[in-house]
Image (cartoon, rainbow, N blue to C red; front, side):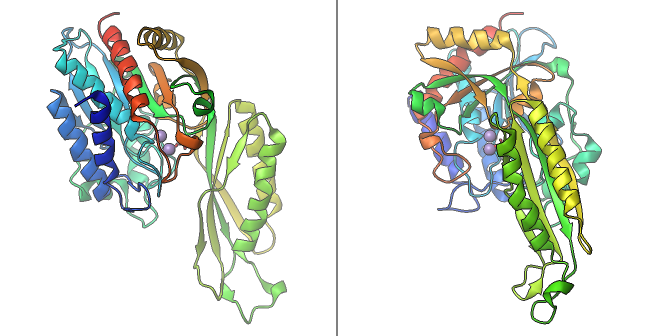
Amino acid sequence: MSLKERIEQHIGTLEQFTATPGCGTTRLTYSQEDLQARNYIKEQMKSSGLTVTEDGFGNIFGKLEGTLPDAPSVMIGSHFDSVPNGGAYDGPAGVVAALEVANIFQKQGLKPKYPLEIVALVEEEGSRFGGGLMGSRGITGVLTDTDFTSLKDKDGISTVEAMQKIGLDPSLPKGRNAETIKAFLELHIEQGPILEEKDIPIGIVDSIVGLAQYEVTVKGQAGHAGTTPMNRRADALVAAANIISQLPELAVKEGDGTVLTVGRLHTYPNGANVIPDKVVFTVDLRSGKEEHVQNVISKMKACIDASQTAGIEIVAQEQLYIQPKSLNENIRTLLEKKSKETNAAYCSINSGAGHDSMIFSDVTDVGMLFIPSRAGLSHCPEEWSDSRHIAKATEIFFEAAKQLTETE
Ligand code: GLV
Ligand code: MN
Ligand code: MN
């Protein structure tokens, strides 16, 4: 089977592990679908001769030992969870490319000096426990054990309970010393239209946007929809809608590519004839420049303060705050060199999406490649990327990994 066919087979298999067959990929962390994907990834790691372990967050590692004793690993990977009704490529494309890099090492009988470590990360999207980037934040120690164990999903199930339900062991070691990681490489789909429009198969990522996520809780008073006069209501949904309608304009006014999204909203008790007493919604805010993120946060808070009218109480809780990141120049240069040597047309590109790479970039040298997304679509069932592009990026990563596992 060719590399392209192997990639298609992996993507096609992982795609089946969804809670919403026919309506895209829904693979929440520590779900049955996570377990199915996890077993497949572990099997593939083993068949490429890797030693497989999991940590206390459920991140999966497949290691090819190096000949140097106790040397740090060249890590390659991405995440394998998804958003609700997402696509088959966001995350898995990077995991699959990493698996195939390891497979080429095996086929060529390579014995590297530094270990090669393939990693499949949990909960990058934050779709189950909020915040996101949980696997990489856990590995790098940004997310403490206490933070981790206190996280609950929307049904009140804790991370620990959810892990145990699929047979994972939360008491395994959590986090690792930065000195055990020599570099981190991640392939990801672009999730936007630039590479497709330029007809360029490879984007070498320069920088990743700064991002903030908030959860806003609006509390009012429940009551009867038919008998409560309009001037005697504290309707949480009306107050929330008033805030939400003002937020996009804050990003537009800030400009310079600043974007803001309210993507999740829950109304309680959610009855057609009951005045809502509670609304919880998320605000996701991004910009290449931190000052823009900061400005919009201040304005959002002012808008919330102004909405605290009689009977309405609002709390905005920060879930995630990450500064914009520039990726390592030496690795970018290495990826350019390997793109040239493998005859791949490339350009540099900035990332508007958040990635585990931005977390690893605080502790090690990080390189990221993007491949085109059809019609620029992602986080939806229509998400699609060409397996030839994944294969090309795999080739570049193999060459880069070969060099990084050999030299200082
Ligand atoms: C991940 O997909 C993100 O950018 O939120
Ligand atoms: Mn995503
Ligand atoms: Mn992703």
